[in-house]
Length: 211
Image (cartoon, rainbow, N blue to C red; front, side, top):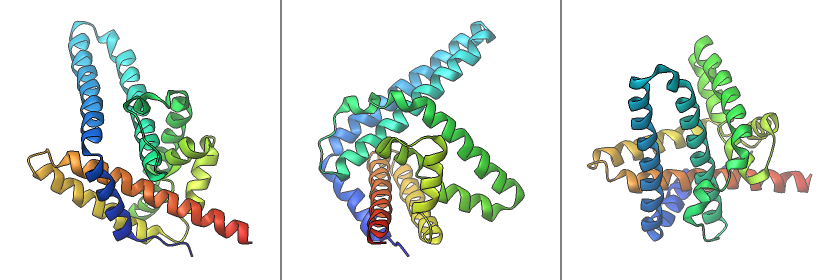
């Protein structure tokens, strides 16, 4: 069974965040600045004409997807000891359609699991979580990324559940620390997830090579 250390993952995330705190502050300010600007623009224009609602919502969804992919790209670069750039936050725009389709399926499957029985919903949410990393890292397709996420997380459902609970608690503490703590907790969580993804992915690749 492939395992990973939650403590090691969070420690890795914290160390990377401390060494690159100014970079992460700029990235988070940029993301939030654009997101809030789009939100207020949407509210303003929707009050003028309801026809603006759909195109602006679609634009916001696309921009948020680009940011999500960009953050994954940045996290994977840090893991590989590469030097990311601010522009990386926009670099994976070509993968947006693939990512949005995979996200839709992910939400559909997880939502169905929660609707039927809560526990299957939690399991599906955890096991399919890394589809975005696989799209960015391996350029996998929509279904392939979800299948691969299920494969690399095999045997780690409970370990991942506890890991994500810990990350949630870290971000709650970040929010309570006058909100500014989120500039530490969010990058720490991001890097910890990248660490876990790479450990699970690399371990499975090594196991397959040995077989």
